[in-house]
Length: 498
Image (cartoon, rainbow, N blue to C red; front, side, top):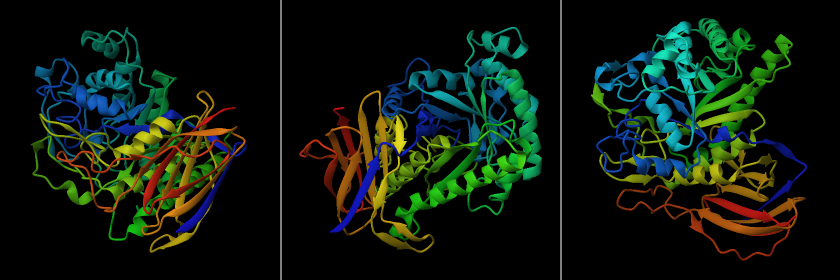
């Protein structure tokens, strides 16, 4: 058995957590929309065609914001195709995913669905084939009450009250050669700046996200981010980050993904701070990690020009769930700068929720760490000072074998502590010291672990991999001892008696 300790002191706060850090993503990709969240023929569908069984699974995740409608899809999408009477909407080719788009689900349907899902919208505008003025028209349609052509058209479509979407993305991954109308950083920076000006003129209350480089692995990174921010630093509020991981043969390297993500975030922060210094600006640029997940890109094959093809429908394992848990610790431990993050995606396409067309809902293994952190890691994030062994990785060098997250919510008096043990064959004798939070009573102890790291959940065996409830058998206080199983994700919840 290995040994490790963690000390958390209430004076060592990182930041208050913006709830939008637990966001997600719905793109017109594969079956995310059609036969995912929207399936009028389904037995649970409501009067608008939204699957209520899916809505329930999403509600349990407590997702406060959802990015829509893309993603790569948005760079060739005309939002006007998705409004008005459904029988009059055109069917188009989707250049991003080589699919057929019927436009039966558009911005108004998304607004209605978001209300029922208990979430808000992060709306992406088309800066590929689209223009700055078309982006302004979309915002006018969504957020202006009445008295203009586009706002009055929305009212004609049955929506008298504006949708009031407050967060807007200026395109998507515009440095990617796969992107419809990809462009240079200089060209994108100018287009983003001019679009931002129009959008802020239409509605000064909104926040804007500029596209960072689409991956840490891109040759444009981080120079793209510097050039873009130098062009539009004063007009935008966030720079975006996208990062995906997949198992490539080494469990040790895969489990260390949390460390790689932290390095990525650190580089983007440094780049943004450099631009701030150059501009002599008082504004600190915040980060929006609006795409992140485990994604197996080999699951992308499909026939061209199908409607709602089954693409990117990853079947996640215990190992994937542990990695997602580790990534969550990194995201929330950077809550001072990462104010928004979107698990990409929410349903079917590389998602924690899977549906059978006209059938059941399945929660993949990755559903559970996200559900736990989203629901319980609220309030303020604190520094977790870990003392543990290092493991040696191929690409990252020596990496801590454990990663942890600690949060405390003053409004409820609850402290949550999450810890990932990446030792594949060794459990850990874990000493946890929680100082100055008052006398703490353990109220919840859950562990996600198993003998087979490649086991997952199926429709036949939906609960094969899910958290196990452990006995509450420790005395109240500030110091605690727990055993962390090998290759495990642990949730500990405490109630302060102070």
